[in-house]
Amino acid sequence: MQSSFTFELDGESLRVDGEPVNRTLAEHLHRRGFGRENRFHRADPWLGGAPLILLDMDGRGRPALRSVDSALIPLPAAAGRRFWSAEGLVRRAGRGEIHPAFALVDSHPELECSWAGRARILTALFEGYYRPDLQLAGQLNDQLDGCLSRTAHYGALRDVAAELFAEAQQRRHEAQLSAQAQGREDDFEQGRVDVFGDEFSALLAGEMPEPEEFSYVDPGKRRYYRPHTIVELAKLLAQFPKGIIVGGSAGLLERDSRDADWDCLISTEGVGDLRALYDQGDRWDVGAAAPLTSVNEMIGRQYPALAKALRRFASRPIRNRVTLGGCLAAARADDELAPAIIALDAQVRVISMDGERDIPVARFFEGNGRTNLRPSEVVADILLPRFTGETLKARGCRTRFADSYKAASRREMSAGGVSAGFAVELDEAGKVTQAWIAYGGVADRPYRARETESALAGKPWSEDTIFGILSQLSREIQAAPGAREPKPGLTEDELEYRRQLVITLLQKFYYQHPKADGPPVELGVINEFLRPNRRLYQPSGSA
Image 1 (cartoon, helix red, strand yellow):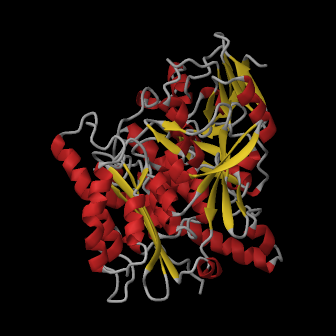
Image 2: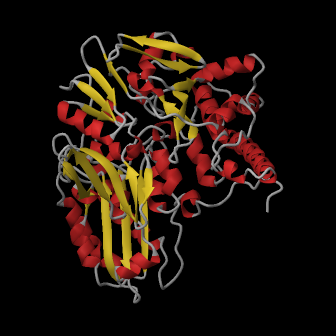
Image 3: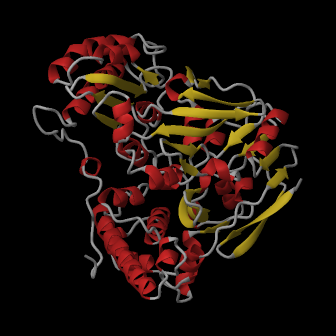
């Protein structure tokens, strides 16, 4: 077991020796005097920690450049990894290696702001430049999450981003035409073509090595393990029952490991099977250690309700690290992803040395941050059914509507006051065969309103039906575990507002989805969610 390790930052190998396992990468960099204006000192309560660029792996196992929140990365998780900072990219520009993102930002005085804000902007634009999928309106907002500033003009930033990403897409289109002419179309589709002719593009065209198996012990004898296989992971869980599971590592800070009774951190990041997404035909098996970004890239278009919830979760540097399994295992009462996953009729698969078992997500939570995970068990996969015409017919229904909602004080980096996930399945006569109604932020756990769901069954999907069950829904939510207990920091008026949101969000779901008596209405929802496939631009020379 090692007592030191190295990682690479801006092309320089940095050695770590004798650091606590639960120190974050941001804390380490600050202690070493790294970062202009002390930007690694502490995380911004509204924007998160200082971002870095990480050479990571996408959902298909290909290299990807991801912006990551350095305040959410345990220091040992950096072992053997490659990072770049805004400071390092600026130094490259000083040597004449000026990236298009930097050139555009420098030419727009409307983007003048503090160095911390400028670093966020440069990191977001740099990552977006190398994203092959960044073409749609909603993706532009997604890429710029976390770039708010008191001085930089956000409208100008969107214009700069659209211009930069249009240039990148045009160059990608030209590279595709060239690859087709050379008979290398498969290489292009697999990401093995150097599109931009620079160091970073060459990295993306290469192979991404698997994270090395790694273990580290600090001076206090606390340990960090990064196993490679599920079997090794299960053995460690049995060996260290007080160990803390870390995937994307957000759970480390949520559990406040500095004070908890624990002896080691066990990372799921090196287990390839837990980072992958598998198409099983009738369902998707989503690895619990897959970052939220990879989940959205791989299956977002097949599950729009989940994609919508993912796009509004925190900021992109956080989504690039936080995992779906970690979110569910944290069992937050205000979890904004769980209601959408419940509406998709999903299950979690948990494993241990004793075997595996599947649990409906709606029954996974036991309240006040607890789940029904047994000792030495860990979430391995989230199982999402596929709702094809054949599967719906087998369930005795004609169509299925699903959507997710989040009521929060602002669009990004704001936990939902109330979040919701809804789904209904209708038969040929337009009657409800089954419904899913789930909320976060209204009880001591993500809560499914089963009594109201039962009341909907067999009734027509109509305004009269919806209005007829609202009072029952309100009573059921108010009787949910922990619903009447005072929430820290909330007044009685704020609690009453949340109770009203329970009703309002269900009404919004009804009015925004097709019905026999007319088209859906917008009701103030952001256009990117109603029409997520609207293109920002079309590369010149394409059809």
